[in-house]
Amino acid sequence: MAGARAAARAAGLVLLYYGFSIGITFYNKWLMKSFAFPLFMTLLHLLVIFALSGLARRCSRRRRPPHAAAAAGRALLPWPAYLRQVGPTALSTALDVGLSNWSFLYITVSLYTMTKSSAVLFILLFSLIFKLEEPRAALVLVVLLIAGGLFLFTYKSTQFEAEGFAMVLGASFLGGVRWTRTQILLQKEELGLQNPIDTMFHLQPAMFLSLFPLFAVFEGLPLSASEKLFRFHEEQLLLELLGKLALGGVLAFGLGFSEFLLVSRTSSLTFSISGIFKEVFTLFLAARLMGDQLTVLNWLGFAVCLLGISLHVALKALGGSKGTKHPEVPGSAADLELLLLLDSQEEVEEEEEEEVAENAPLC
Image (cartoon, rainbow, N blue to C red; front, top):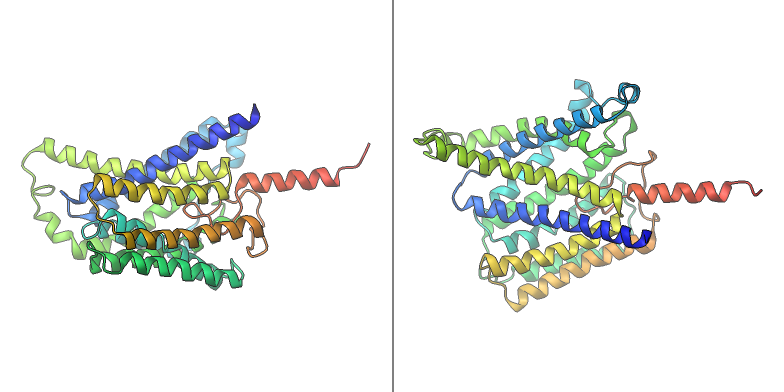
């Protein structure tokens, strides 16, 4: 009975994660067809995520008993620590998200999905640089498979767009910095950001300030002259547009929260495997709903790339903690998007329970 409940719970969380992840991908592509201001859209999403994460922090504090709430509180960093620790992470995250959304003006969902999967390569690269992962010979094969798959997918593609491809590839590179820096934030006990809601709350203001200059340069003047926003004529159309933009922020917040729920209630392996199937499902929907044209060579490249990602997941499952340096703080959250480096909360708790059982005296 317990096993059936756990399986049902895991399936429900996977579906929730699929819904938010695929939903926001197609939402961004759909909105970019009629609203060509991706940086403004991203800034508005950041404001919505900040408001919702702040609301979640307040609600979680009120649900605690008075004495527990006073003792626990919520993390709030001083300015020096905020700028030094959160600033670089926020900058890389803002540019990653901004370039990803910007690329939808140029490329298809399928090319975006395939190129974005190359973030695994850059996460591996920066995890080695920051010494979060130790070098292994098998990682070379993983890199070759993913890079080779990406080359096959883009080679003579009928819907290839160099400008959009460069944006997504740059976003994937920044994603490597983003997630390794995020992992470092989550591991630092003195910062108190082990809860992803606290991390999201602290990241959004710095992300907004990091992205705003780019928005001012590329979209400030066109947006001020656009009849869709600053030169609007009908209030109802303006409110409808702002509602559509705010919906994306809700989806983005739901995606981050569903990722955390999935990994904390199941395991990092479950999350990684479900992520692989999510990519396949996204490409299938892109071909059916968006009219993306995929050749046999494209599908072959995608299969080779997925083989590399699957190999990495298998190595993590079979190798355990041999190649990964785990946090010293029990309960640190894992990488919320790809989860390539850490064990999940539940796995850590299970290891602690096993150690207690082994060291318990026999009666």
